[in-house]
Length: 209
Image 1 (tube, one colour):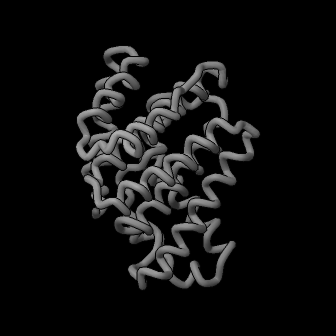
Image 2: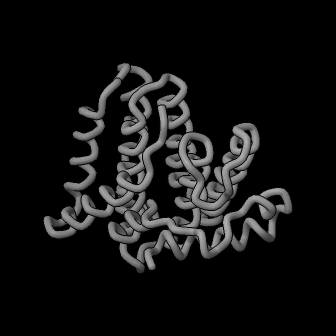
């Protein structure tokens, strides 16, 4: 079972305990089939000894689930009306950011809050959803490198949003270059494994414009 699959089951239990409304709409545990998630990419990049690994593992999957509720297909909840999915997505975003906030490190919170805003912009402007997935991969890789270094390396998140908001990027070319730069921080064999992890995530989750 992947890290993402285990984490989604953990989140399912927390959601069931937190909210009656959400509990009524949860998929059965048997029907959960998350093949991949960004906690897998984070763990591959940072390793199990990475600082704050449990907070990041939970935070990434909560926030990615919020993204899927807004723009794709939920792994946790049965299909419902769009208005409910928006509210449920906001709940997932808040829970994810709260998990990261337990680390008392503003860098992770700011990075993931910025990612949420960036994804919203991409979809509201009807840009290629692949831009959002690339932004997810870049942010996850940089968070892993930052956490693995004990919070001492500058992950350089700010340019990501500016690249799309200010320069009007409408294809993945420029983000692909940033993705390659992010991968360059890892040794050759590790880069191959990370590419495969991201390919698995991308193949399983295709958000709509």
